[in-house]
Image (tube, rainbow, N blue to C red; front, side):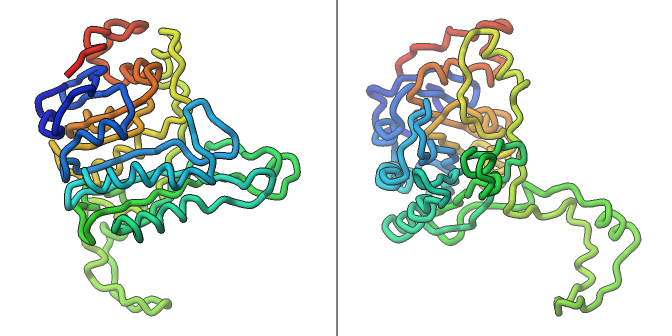
Length: 319
């Protein structure tokens, strides 16, 4: 494990480093057990897309909606403990239908309420992760009976221990639209809009970009990425439920500073660690499945010997 992450831990016995990079460490193990060894108030951002509560079991170990909230609350208590006072917890959660019926589970909302009421988290803001490339599902209700539309949005809870967590939307500004660029170039006459909003001269100030909305449109189309190609070449099955790198890039830039510590408790293909590495943040990622960790090495070019084989010199190291 890199020296910068060692102060995170009260003790490192049984914490098995799978590989190190310049800025972070991937650990093979149970994140609940790893967190139990970590210091209070030590992590600036916990960013994760945990296994969703789905009707059908998936290979990455999801729970049913009935048991999911209780299962996740055990992790949430540790999240609260290890999170820095001004830190943030971001959770990307997909929806689920009730078994056998075209009606929805409300497990994401039950989880949110319990985390706020029982653990004293604050809901800083809700986001919505829209994936326009998602396939229509469940087929029974969407493509066979045609009584529901395609489910393409995950809820994202941004939670914190204080009402004022570290954040700056200046770090995630979007390029201005053509109409806004024209307005900045040609000027704008302040006036009262039909809605009653008074638009002042400040509206024409160039702030180097537009403030993004809380709807994140991010297509998950990674089928031809270097990660996927290298996994295929090495005969390693990629993680089946990856979130797009734009997702982790956005929240890391929005909610942390350089050299802050980002923690991913359900590492998967380690998109979070890859984003943190590129954005000059320290990171710690924990994954229970060794196959997924072996594939995640391909996110880090410096660990790759050639196009087919990962650099195994970092594997099986103990702290």
